[in-house]
Length: 332
Ligand code: NDP
Image 1 (cartoon, rainbow, N blue to C red):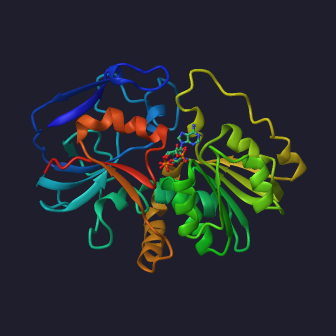
Image 2: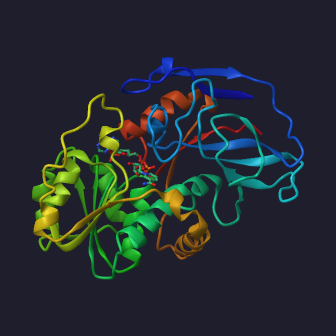
């Protein structure tokens, strides 16, 4: 089984020296365990944070450990009562071709409902993040104007489409004309290209009454632009801060935070894992929207297997993906 382990903690962007890529024997499942042949790996911006030796919402990946990753795969051996050989499952299997698990947090997936990559995107953790971030944290209501940054990515594209489904006006911020054109093609009312537009000026044009919910995945200048154009009582949802994940020093604080006072607004961070006991509800609703075409799921699937993980991860920070970034493993 090919697998990727953490060799050393990176400073800045994780280069090849960060990882050990090697081969181990395919493990055998013990009593109560199952063996999964991984077919698709999830690439997540948060992976960069898991490499830092700091206190966070999950412990860091240890030196020498298999890199943590969400994945989809097929059960190839089972000594677990709930899983049978041939089942397709998703779980945190790690960057490995074969994984043994005790079934904790492992969910069976229905490939009749959607293909494997979608189970890592719209029907997976990013979809859950979009759903609870928007509904529970953002308390979105029909008629709201919603701003989403990182809008052409896994979380952002689903968040924007859910907001549309709920009757909102939706503005997305993304990098480049192609991503922006895709956003308007899937129903966003406007898309701002942060690489060529003046974001704040464009935002004031397309959302002249201000933004009621700002779902921020990016932070930095993007957060400041959104803060500068809120409506009264706005909810700013801090989902992520990808612009800073590979920086070696802390960014300046949000320069526009006094907007929270002026607009009687709130800014709230959240971690999707806290909603785990409600994932089934979110999955069912998103699956319904996928089935009737209200939400379009898109994934960028990279080839190359486990060995391509180090480079694929960097792709996230370069924006190579539209929709969810997935690595095809095919170890079955
Ligand atoms: P995406 O699919 O959105 O991929 C990352 C995207 O970020 C890239 O495609 C790129 O798009 C954009 N990007 C990269 N670098 C920058 C930069 N310097 N400035 C602006 N944009 C940049 O990833 P996810 O949907 O998986 O994650 C989105 C965010 O949600 C992340 O911040 C992540 O950490 C967060 N998250 C939070 C969770 C929670 O529980 N709070 C759970 C899951 C995700 P472009 O080409 O447009 O620049």
